[in-house]
Image (cartoon, rainbow, N blue to C red; front, side, top):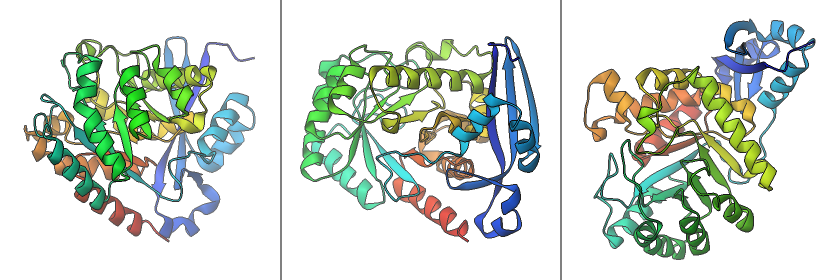
Length: 351
């Protein structure tokens, strides 16, 4: 009999291009539109973690004898019913920070007309949503009062709604959420995973609004002091799993939830690399996964280009790496370039 302290995680790997699938189909599993030849079983028991990998055909034999593994496998291969995808394979969320101090574009988008023109161009370049934020969440950033945040973002939201542009709102404040939703925002992107403001979940329930739950230890001000993980991948997984259960307990349907592992938020270089190498583990959460790696500092730590706008190559490389792990939602600054990379990858991966 299994101990209550035993928990299993599954990570598919061994990406198989669709053009090669006929040679491997009997020995592959489909996960969110991609095919894989291997599965890693990660077992956590109290403070001990073990990892062992199997070919898919060998994994089936083991899973037949273990209910927890069966449940995880069913979650891994389950098709997600999420209301924002429709028929698209991938989604691009373009970043529009209306702040004076964001790490990459701080101070660039404080003019109302410029914001609206830039958002329109982002959509023309291939963005599916414009992700609007009025508070910098870079490491060490100070908290912004909700009233100031609202004054920054609301005029742009109202104007873009008039232009019928799809928008998400990057905020952790319930008041900003409600006014944004009333003004036309379709998705809330909360870096605190609804932990910053206890009223946030009530707003989402009230308006039946989808939410992106991101992992961040502490706050932007304190998160880089909270990088002591037992196992960063499993710790982030457990956090997101708990937040999903919290939302469901309050009445928010899982089909309205997207998760984000929070690259760069309270993680050092090694933490970020571990997460990026093991992104496919998050599929058993049964939610679409958003990845925000655009222009982030870990790229410079690898390649030594210090300015955020010089990190496009690393951004594209990481995006393709993530797509091979089944990541479908990409939050980016450089829409045209990201769209081109995604389109080419999807075309090359066709049968």
